[in-house]
Image 1: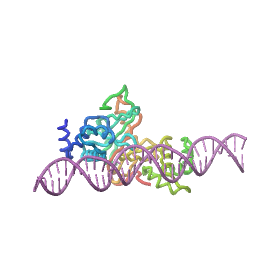
Image 2: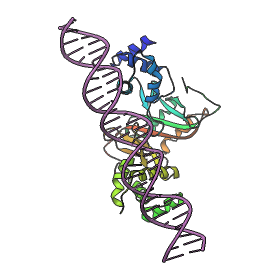
Image 3: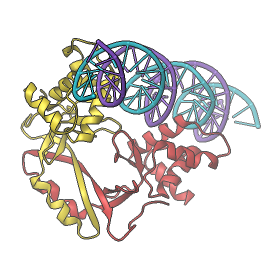
Image 4: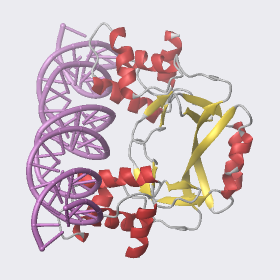
Amino acid sequence: MKHNVEELLSTHGVKPTPQRMVIAEYLLGTHSHPTADEVFQAVKTKLPVSLSRATVYNTLNALVAAGVVQEVTTEAGRVRYDANMSDHHHFVDIETGDVIDIPAETLNQIKLELGDKYKVRSFHVTIFGEVVGGKAGNTGE
Amino acid sequence: MKHNVEELLSTHGVKPTPQRMVIAEYLLGTHSHPTADEVFQAVKTKLPVSLSRATVYNTLNALVAAGVVQEVTTEAGRVRYDANMSDHHHFVDIETGDVIDIPAETLNQIKLELGDKYKVRSFHVTIFGEVVGGKAGNTGE
DNA sequence: GTCCACGTTTAGACTTATTCTAAATACAGA
DNA sequence: TCTGTATTTAGAATAAGTCTAAACGTGGAC
């Protein structure tokens, strides 16, 4: 895995430092859509040196800019990070707060339905509801 | 208009104080999807007394809780307010940042397409792109 | 009309998330 | 090895929002 991460960063133009590697590795290995602070808490012990929050924010911003991960907003004012870069949307379980990925195929119709008036660059759908029959998809690590 | 606002607040269980009236009036009269601070800046001179930011936040939260306005998130971490409570989504002009309301009819198909696996309580779509042929809809005041 | 209770507002302190800054560090290439 | 550049660090600074305690305003009981 480590090797993959290193390559992933390199091919996206992000120099693979130890700090960036553990952060990217953590994001790639979870489906929990963590906040910046959750990333910090999760990886700070995985390095031989102390880790600064500034590095976490710098790295997250760099990874977003490089297209390695994306930002997700499900609650007003809280930013989460998602290494799943496939075309997908989000389902928020309103009981638990879990964020579940929804593949985009079924929703791509939206672009067509918007018509000629708007040139759509991208769109994102956040859906709130309950999972029928308990947990499904991926909600933790 | 003032009379309408007073009634609107009352019927939603929000006591219509002068502060709440000018804030609600401002939100009802704009399509600019302002942030809390933009609301504060816009209404602070419209009262004979000084206005506290705390009152703006209290009022916005009360109006959201009462269902008079809704929160909108178009940029990671920034909360905006929208008095348009009709079923609609948002189009963000990626050149200007303007937020334009998109009526929901054309997109309601989404719920159907999600199938039986998820029980949808609500969903929100934010679309990023460019308006074909210049401004359309409502982008300011 | 006066008084009281209670909800509202105010200013400013506080919290939380994020960015900035300046110094220390690491490391690739001459 | 030396040096320049990018990265990381700790902590200060900023921004958005919440909390607190005191002051205020208003409707109902008298």
